Image (cartoon, rainbow, N blue to C red; front, side, top):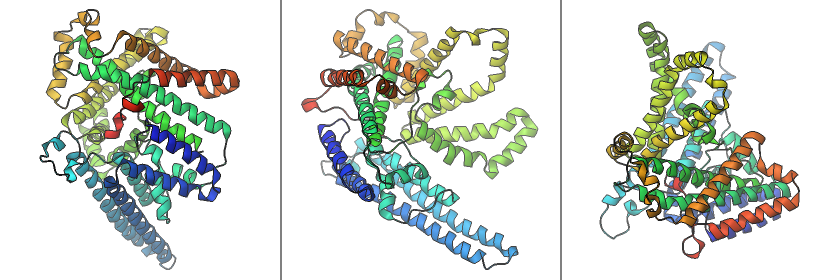
Length: 518
């Protein structure tokens, strides 16, 4: 069931009615039933993957919790000299349980990524339905990362293990975030899912408004510009055409991904549940490090907490730090951090896909961040010599520079062949050919003049809303303060825009979200 389908809208309407009609203590069971139905609608054949994650997560965390309970009972009876050994023994057992849970789940994820996605899936021949003929299970990367974060937190004893398997299943399978996240933490999400929620007209209104804004970004902008992105991937489009492709793809993936986030977070807000923000206007970033603190925030936080930090403080890297500091000075001190960063970015790239271009994409991001860090003293001397930093135009220059740089790196997503990606990038210097911008080439990409006009207006509106949010905060709150007439008029206008200008297929069906494939 796609967020953009008519069936989903009917499903959502029924859910909201039932959710607020049942007693508060039963609301979590309504959400669990709705999540199960949503996942079954995507395909019963994928349910095994979700159940595997739920069962292994529940079994391993309750096992660790039982070990901790026995440990506390033993510590009360042991002399002081033996307590340390007891703690170490239990920690070792729990570490083995953690390793078992992580390895089995990530092995399943790797199997799915390797066998159930293109291009390897195309190697399957024959017409008979088999395991390898399936697509990637809905949301597997998101619910698995979320669950493995919870298992790690139980191991670290920062959260208590959930003893009710149904409640843990709801945390794992909560359907608004199944499609493309965000990746939530148990301590933040679980209490909200399980406590009663009373109907709040303002919050329901805010949630539905945000969903409508998400549909606007997805259907009016992302799905429309996707036609041109697909056309520009053809081999003959190099030079300036590749630059246009990188910009168009940036608009497409931003509108698509944030549109999906708006739908997920808006629906959750209507249910009284606050999911973490995954984007905070990344295209206003002045450097790549800030950009990645604003884009896909929950994935970045997960990688930082569960990959980067444990690796950077590991015994091998601490030993390397001491050795490198003696040989290379301050750079040697930073070297282990850079190694941990490279590993983290490699994992991030592999999370997106097992084709080489995603690994290169991750390492290119890491390279730019590391080089920028190393050049920080040079930047400081430059800004001390020239007073550009205080100029408003220089701030916008930094934003534009970061936007274009990230676009060129992101374009690596589009070409599984890394050599093809570098050929296109090199053509910016060897065969720029700017004439394609005015010789009619852009009108041969499957978009009409009206389409370009709608895109220009839609992107302008999206930018304006982001600018207002950057400067004044929540725009829905501003509209609420402006009175009902203004709010209803703008909401109705946006609804008409989505209905009349959305890029639909047959029967008002729209394409799926890009991040469903991850």
